[in-house]
Length: 225
Length: 415
Ligand SMILES: Nc1ncnc2c1ncn2[C@@H]1O[C@H](COP(=O)(O)OP(=O)(O)O)[C@@H](O)[C@H]1O
Ligand SMILES: [Mg+2]
Image (tube, rainbow over all chains, first blue to last red; front, side, top):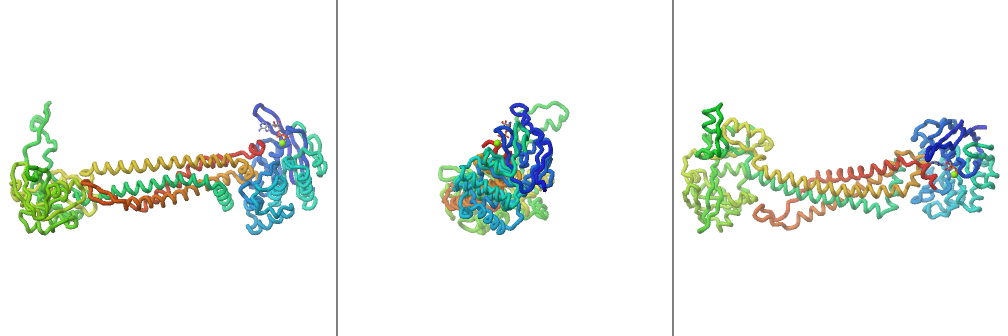
């Protein structure tokens, strides 16, 4: 099995308000096409670990490797370019850019990557929106959509550059049961049909149970996987 | 780059009111700058031109009031001498060998023309009233070559002076005060008490009160007669150069060579030039103040925009925009505001200047104009736009840098 993401003894401290070890020698590897749920009590360090894995947080000890590239010690600009191409994000609060249309929101990461022409990017964006069943909303202002629709747009945006991993920090935390279910089904379809790797932090046991693999954290450590 | 510009554009268009307010600040600043600078430099150039054409580039004369070493200092060189309030020697303002000096100077290739003349203070009698003024004895044709007198004639012709031994060409302001027309006679008295009647054959107007209200031209021989002096009596040599900028360097050489005071144009008009400088300082300080205020406006608005867009910035960074991309997004916004604001400012400035140029204005006795002189030199429009764009770039830089430094984790975690 090909490993998409690998960490070696990732350790992190917070120094405010006092020195406190939030991540303790995390060793984690994720296979391609795996749908992984990260669970644990509130405050155990799930979000902190996600920020390290996402390359946005560089203030840690240990090693991080994604898609065969060692990312520890790279500078911010290189990491930004790496995120653009290899990582897709889905956040708890949707976080679309409100002044732009749905279509533009989905296209922006691809325009940034500039691997395809604008024409092709638009086609690909429509394709992703269609896959998520929201192509009718494409030309609407993104702030005009409901919460569940916005989250689906965010997933489409995360998919646009065919990333190696999609990461979500409680992507369903702000959704009702219906939409939670919907997002889960989408994730499942993505992994099974398209071999998309997904790591999602969740509080929802139902959601976790249906994923391929559950990793449980407690007090900054991985206790079960 | 195109994407970043696209995002900047969307930000600007999504908050049109804010964008327009920010632009108006710049527009106002630049508009005022253009209007002020056009009027001020217009006035400066106009008066400068007048003064330049009506005064010689170099003026050689015998300055009898100039401090001289006292006799006792010459005799008793090493002693301790106390001299109190020494008066000038009783000598005339005569420049000796003036005609020969004029001939020599005329040979210099830098020199365009040389005109020897006599000047004296006189009183013009108007019934029982005496008006003080001066009279210039000149070769009127030479004078015309130097100062373009022919074009300044309001009545009569300069040739009439040549033909009339007791003729006089009078300044317009003076003629008005004396209630004189061409053909009238005027009685004048010299400080020495000699009285003579001359006939006014022409009236000129230089355009500046300091000349038009006091001066008359007569033939050299006439003035020599009034002053009861011989045919070699000359008090001034006026010189025009091909390049006026050489005057400052050339004047001291002439002074050294011939031993008379030699004054260049700039020194003679120092007070006027100081006025120019003060006007320029005023223009630039007012405009810079306005632009700084506009700059603060942009700084504020951009800061507010960035504060409101923290989440968006975090998202952009999470999606792979580098700090420099984010900085560019906001720099582009401030530069667009600065550029469009400045261009509008230039148009408003041009409009204002055109209005000012059309408004009637009475220069009174001081300068003869009926409209304010306005300068439309494109140079100031270029300065204006460079100025405006630089200010906004400067004002936008700090907020943009702050945006580029935003840590996305802090924003995303905060929710
Ligand atoms: N910026 C920070 N500075 C100091 N402590 C922090 C900071 N962010 C989070 N923490 C602490 O680190 C621990 C882990 O937080 P987090 O990763 O958000 O937990 P989880 O997402 O699992 O609920 C918590 O105790 C939290 O209070
Ligand atoms: Mg969390």
